Image 1: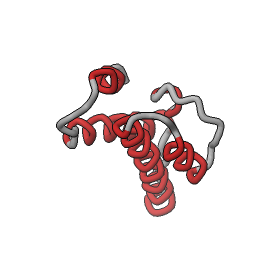
Image 2 (image 1 turned 90 degrees about the horizontal axis):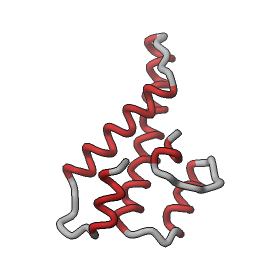
Image 3 (image 1 turned 90 degrees about the vertical axis):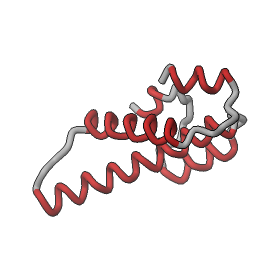
Length: 96
């Protein structure tokens, strides 16, 4: 779901593979940062959901985790937006 949201055609489904694809991509520094933030936020959301299930017997739906990740990535990116961002990158981000 996250790859669809970012319009990201990558074959890897492992964390290390995704991070490697980000580093090797020809995307701008800004887009790489957004994708990296999304992968890290997803890993954190999964970790939190696993702990919540283990300690509190509370389960979460995958769609809810993706919503949390989207919200976190969008808000943190807006908060930490670099001073110089190309218009096409800004348009890409605003259309997410």
